[in-house]
Amino acid sequence: MELAAFALSGRLFTAELRAGTARELPARGPVIDPRPSPDGLHVEYVGRGAPCG
Image (cartoon, rainbow, N blue to C red; front, side):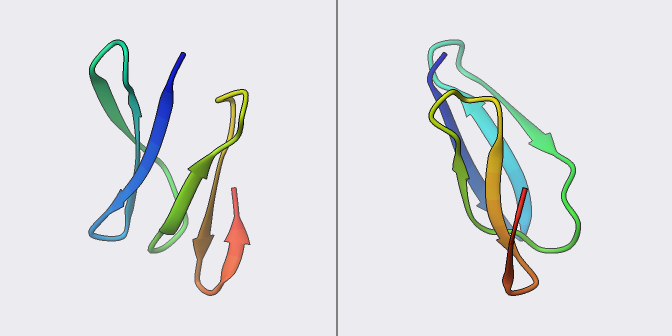
């Protein structure tokens, strides 16, 4: 699986690139700078000034 993560208006999304699908993930508060783990099982992001995920 090739996974991308992105923030849009402070909300967290992932996209499966090969499948061409995207979905919103729950997150506490606004999200900045999301990044998927190398295995694609986790997404880390900055929220309220501290790393989360």
